Image (cartoon, rainbow, N blue to C red; front, side, top):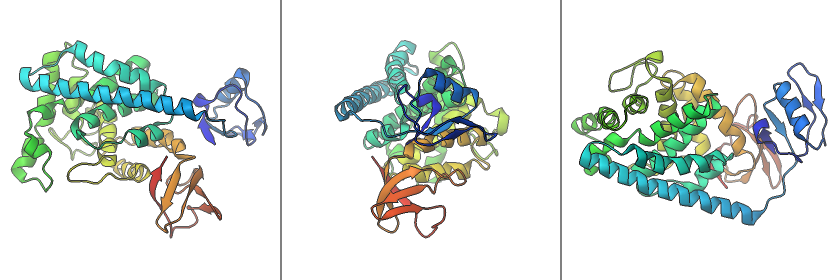
Length: 343
């Protein structure tokens, strides 16, 4: 199994020789890792290593999954309450935001396998509120992956959690309309960033949480709304929240959209990075998400099933698959592709 060096534990055993970028052998296959070995990997700027499969305590995994689900559902319930407060009073209580988001941040901080977590949680009912929770989680992760410090990552997470609060002022008939929106209805939808900015500015002394609510639909090429901002005119946290927003929206089921596969949506994000979304942030997101797909079961367009065993450095989205009959390297077999990833 391939893991990032930040996820290594003492006692893990290497399944391959490890070489640094200059070709120097750093550690040999079969090495049982201790703290000094892990430090050596950091010193040689090695990001990922292959280790032997760890023993899995299924009861422990089930308990951890249940804990995440409980925190997620509670955060969703409290998000709904925040929307109700904002609709009624035009503001939210900062303490209520912290009470809702802090346990979520504490829980997801301990979850390294983001893909498994998303597959487990899903988004079926109460899309608006569950989407807000997911965007908060993903914004927190991406900010960390991009090297922001913990406080900055928490700001990004809270901003993601609140990014759609302005939708409390949009009629449910428009938000949940199963068919295509009329131009007038879409114009109304496009007001929610400004509504969100106004609500958050009424609630917090600092503007840092309000800006992403206003800018999360802006695009790097100027094609977004409400102000058609371009490039660096869009704040860094807004660009982070925009990526989390798009990813969560595309993997979620809604009245007018079937959920799309997590790996497929990463490909969509990759395409959007050539113009609309911050390319540096998108590529960082993809690099950190892809290793989480190793060990996941997949269904292929051919109807065959297998397990992802290795990613392809030249094409993240066409990995090596272990089938019952052998191995299939999708980077060399373009007639087949992954259509679904599951636990």
